[in-house]
Length: 217
Image (cartoon, rainbow, N blue to C red; front, side, top):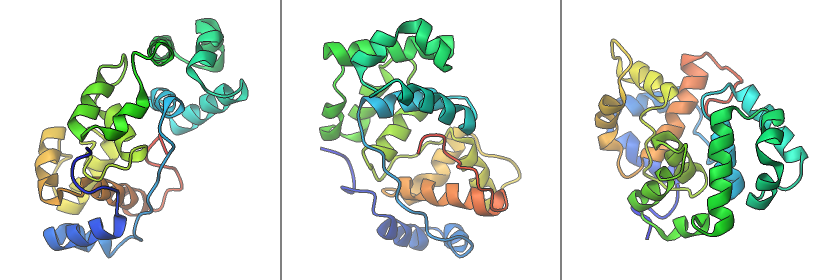
């Protein structure tokens, strides 16, 4: 079964973090409470994550829109599109490989996204990161936004690193290992901490930018 709390309880997580960390408590005074963001799990969400890797939010949105214009985003439909049509839509060569590999695995039944729901966080991450093109960030974003897991911590996310630097008054941006240590007191609600720091990054660090911070939302 999933580890930790059963769902991403924003209010409960913020209350816990406020008691555990005075710096985060002060951060909460400067921003509105973040909202819970969820996306339906499954093949389309996994493709969306691939599209969102290492591109601007605007580019990812445009590619996703063009893919959606071709019809329902299913494994079989993507395989029918093939590499040339995906390239025309805007997929890079690596992302074509990742997407077609994912589609082949889902269509054949070798990978079944529905099974992730009953897995613990570590097992689900292991299954996701075995997919071609899926690293830690991609797996964590799926677990957080699609499965609503409460204790996921994307320590490689630049916005989280920068927000934590400001909140903690650090001289430089923490690397992923340092950010993991900083986040230890926030267990088992690190997903809520991530939501809070993304909001803090947008509203305080970036001065109220209207851009979305996480490409996959």
